[in-house]
Image 1: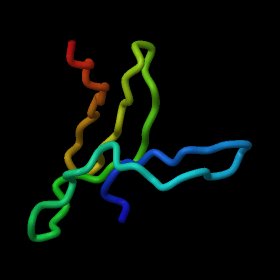
Image 2: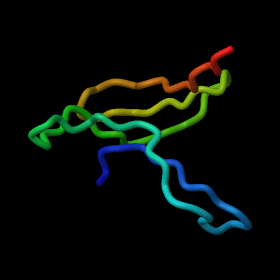
Image 3: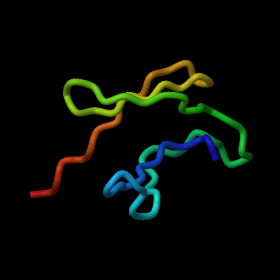
Length: 68
């Protein structure tokens, strides 16, 4: 849709599984864009930085810590 960030697993240089949503919520309930991811990069601490040209923000996404 262009309004979410997905992960696609690869094996041997080819897609090997279904896409998994990583970051969503850029469209409101009326399908109006509240943001739009246009670029992604990993930072030095392992986070995913996502540039949003509608919201004029850079989002930092990290994984949740496992429950003990």
